[in-house]
Length: 369
Ligand SMILES: NC(=O)C1=CN([C@@H]2O[C@H](COP(=O)(O)OP(=O)(O)OC[C@H]3O[C@@H](n4cnc5c(N)ncnc54)[C@H](OP(=O)(O)O)[C@@H]3O)[C@@H](O)[C@H]2O)C=CC1
Ligand SMILES: O=C1OC[C@@H](O)[C@H](O)[C@H]1O
Image (tube, rainbow, N blue to C red; front, side, top):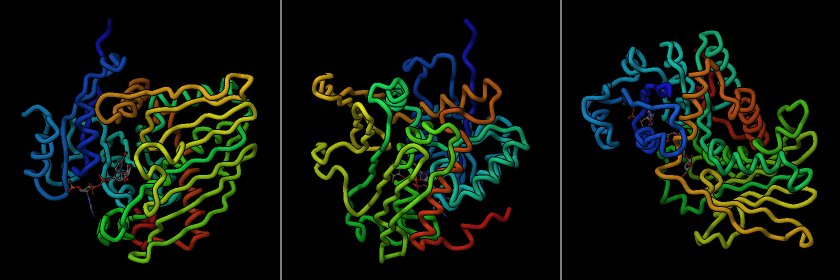
């Protein structure tokens, strides 16, 4: 048996999700049937100090002496031992931080939403292409075995021709107390707001099902509504209707009202995929779903049982495995989250913001580089 392909990671930005992802990289891929690859965390960088990066590595359980700690992002991306940089900074900073990594010759996995707008995304993909580097938006949900199973069910025709997807990621919050104005969730300078932070997952479900039904997939036409948060002017409740060639997607998001208020699923499924013969329902939360069921007409079996799919850890390693295999195979993009689709989702969010008059400061919408 050949030895596993090893991918050496550098973590850029030592915040909350970076810690979840880093811990997941330390789990043995063989336990999830991914023994063909191996992830190693070789470095982490903060924007503040070396001791903070050291603390991050140690808190995540990275074995002492196996990873370098950096106090600047520049020093991190220039570490010759690093193959790929995981960018986990706020939305506003993805564009400059990804460019920093690409210009240092590193592959990139960048957190969602990929950039603030579609023009920035296009530039990053162009640069990656010119430099022959792999790059992907970290839409982890698409890599879950559950998502793969649901996409295959749709393709198999089990629920007939799919005509509509209704998708909701809404989290109930006392916004004024949960998110002070400087918090990245609501801070306009950090491209805060429900659409870019949570709505991207509702759109993920719409896209991973409906975009692929069209022969020549393109960005859908959009009709949207944006409700703003008075505290900072970001969006708090946004609804997007996407008109594809053969189907309609309705993506909803909010951090003011909740999809699953009691946490018991009483609010119903978060995602409904409607076909001419039946429906697939996926339970909340849209970003990390653990169960789904198929409902057919009564004479064809009616409602199936919920099928549960739980993983160990934070479930963020599936996307890391996707990066490793793509890089091993000499690909610049991964077919599960292709560049074209990231751009399309960004275009839908741009158009939604245009219709809702939701503009971020010029400094973070800028494509100057
Ligand atoms: N896939 C998922 O499930 C999730 C994805 N995310 C995405 O990950 C990204 C980070 O989110 P999250 O971890 O919650 O955020 P945090 O605020 O916890 O961490 C962000 C980190 O970015 C760095 N940073 C650099 N510049 C700034 C700045 N101007 N203001 C604030 N932080 C800065 C800091 O790291 P340092 O001090 O080390 O430089 C900070 O710790 C976002 O894009 C978000 O959408 C978030 C949560 C879940
Ligand atoms: O990506 C995310 O998923 C989980 C949410 O709690 C978080 O705000 C968001 O950034």
